[in-house]
Length: 137
Image (tube, rainbow, N blue to C red):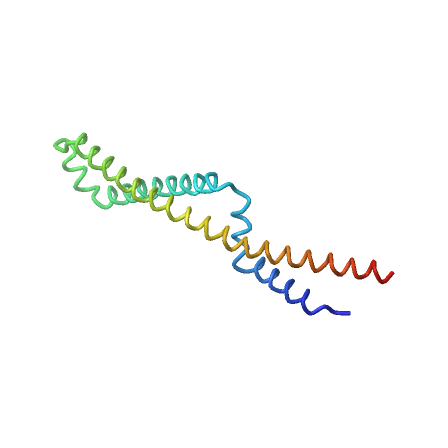
């Protein structure tokens, strides 16, 4: 015999696992500090590659000017500006990543608490049904 209550709970669980909860379940495998650290490192590496790519493209675009003025350019001053700008960009993005992924982790845990409540409800339902079946036998 079909149990409608059990079917509703299992449908909600499956929808969560296949939809919005898929990423939440992956996130739950990490401790909060490990998850945030991993995401911040990924952000830092991405920012570094992006910054280098922009510098290379900028250098290629202005190659004629750079080649014609190579003797008179103050490379120490240019390097200081580029490093300062890189540090500022890195600080902003790392701070944003830290805050953003911390909020995302907390939100994920909140979603998972609802998921675990449904699992407990389903487990209680199974236990009640098994107790009823043992009583009937």
